[in-house]
Image (cartoon, rainbow, N blue to C red; front, side):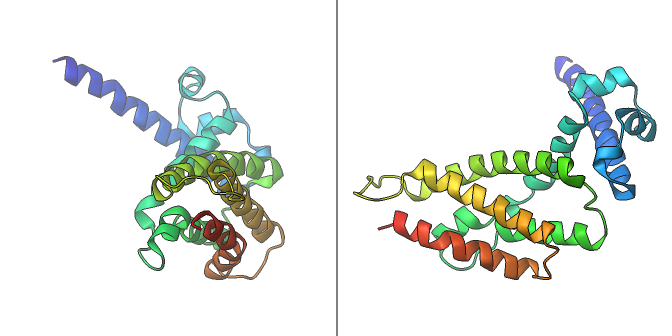
Length: 198
């Protein structure tokens, strides 16, 4: 009995959160994120104000939740090619570039500067966690050598460089394909990763 009681609110919570995420997504498709008010999200989702604030602090928090749905599927999309150690650390990059390219082509990247900064901030934080785990596994048992880059610096460097390349790709409206921009990102990162395995 207690298990069933616990499941019903979970389903209700998940449904409410999905309605809100879908509403924000459809509004972003229509116009810039910065111009969207919480009331419009509530109207589109047909959700009450108190229910919204029970789950999210504000629309920025909702945007971050939308991003986590996308990011959650990235590890399963990792290619199993090339150097296994490198792919475990950098396997997130191409799937994210490909996903963003699909959104760009569909005209769904109408975040505006503020919305993009929020999204990229959350993306960088999530990447740091993911990369730290993979770097920890791949370099486990190795002692720091003289002149070798500390692991936590490697993690921050990889995540920051990814966001830097992503911002450049979006802001410059570069015609590079997701694979080409991923190659650019890797060209910047691989020398540092190579130095950690020496």
